[in-house]
Length: 155
Image (cartoon, rainbow, N blue to C red; front, side, top):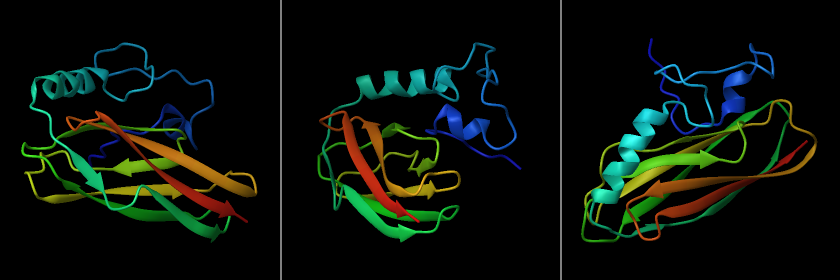
């Protein structure tokens, strides 16, 4: 079984079986500093700089899950459209917390077509109260970074 862990934070990899001070390394043996495979991200980032710019529009940029039980996992799908005249490529998605995992398309979205980004939030170990997490989407759209966010009231 192959599991792709693109665009998640280091801390989600450390739970639950690794101690908080565990050392992680990239595929080429370098110490991990925030990206799962920095060489792949670097290649994608270089590709973005060479692509023609386009535009994208989200139908919503913020979602509130409302009240959820501590320890539950919830998902929400953010829909977007390539509103430009060139293909749209999402390179990576940065998260503010390892409890939030974004799933985004890795293939280019043609002009006029739509795509979706699924955000999964795991409230395990979270304190009771309001949680807000941001996901920064990096693409060849203008601007190059767009932020979507989720809220939840952990009970």
